[in-house]
Amino acid sequence: MFERFDGDVRRAVLAAAEEVTGRRGDPRLGTEHLLYGLAAVGDGVTVDLGITPERVHRELIAWDLEALGSVGLETDPDVVASVPIRHHRWWGPIKHHVPFTDGAKNALKRSLQICTSEGHRSIGTGHLLAGLAVGGPRDPAVRLLYRLGLDPAVVDQRARASWS
Amino acid sequence: MQRTAIAAESEDPAEGLRAVAALRRLAESLEARQVMTARRAGWTWEQIGDALGVSRQAVHKKYRKVM
Image (cartoon, rainbow over all chains, first blue to last red):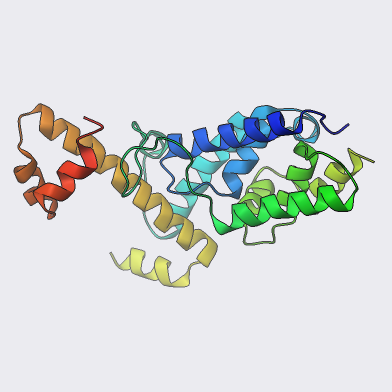
């Protein structure tokens, strides 16, 4: 069930990932934003697993609040949730193409490798999800999957099952 | 303050580093809002820069386009 419109899917995921990066005011596009992008495109395994963009966004804010709390900083959720303008740390407002984190670049590479090793011609959401799920315990998207109540190993299996 | 220091030391790096990133984001957001408020209230770039502890040029360069 992987997608035929490979370029469109990829663009849609990246556009949504870029949008949420800007909206949150994060300086780089990371794996957690890619997971949001997949959820926003909303087809295949992400839907089956209940990974919605709203849940991902909510969980990112909850994680920020917990992280701040863990170093002794109690913060108003509304303050954390609202970043009113898209602004890049040093280079002014975000126009196009937020830089990727190394983790996000590697996740995309892994997705492509998975796609190629399976002998598929075009990369789909399943490949991207599998690439994100195997990022290791310190990866933000993997942490986010746990926070969403999902085992990354199971997510990887489900993603692979989707194209077999 | 002591609680912050203790928490910062005993923390799981994943949470501690995440907190740093969230704080940077909050600081950027707060700065943008305060600079806009100040501009609307008639503060000059120089006055804003002085208040933030940065140069007039730095604050102007960063915010002139979003104003």
